Length: 193
Ligand SMILES: [Zn+2]
Image (tube, rainbow, N blue to C red; front, side):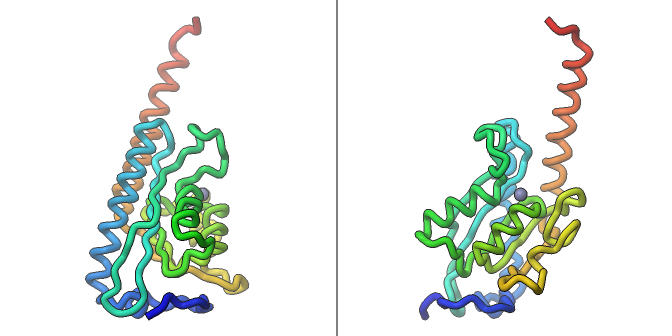
């Protein structure tokens, strides 16, 4: 079966799309979210806010196989780039890998709810599905502050699954900011040289 050339306005459910049972889909979702969490840990190790993302492509039809297309983590500090969120870097790498800006039949696994920029980019990329970890009440755009992925005025709406392995995703973020606060407080207490 060929990869469909047109994007349905109403995304099919993952069950229909991949021919997987829901319990099996859940196992795969957890597997790939763990890879996204590994990316988030790599971000923390290099002093970046720990957010990680993975893009997976599912082949069409029953019994379809999934393939990792791209993995990335937040690199705003390293690249001095305000757009270098994990999702954007992952989308760019996936486009290069597939030789196509339309990421048909692809799912993004990301540890934190996408912001307005990333939710917009994911919609523009025609991504089939977004699976994210913890909510971002201050900047989330797939349900928290905005719901870009679910806006019926847009001609493509990715399916969204939220809250997968959210405890670990938010623990990484809390730990990162706690360490950063501690070191900046310590810096303030010491006299400058
Ligand atoms: Zn973002």
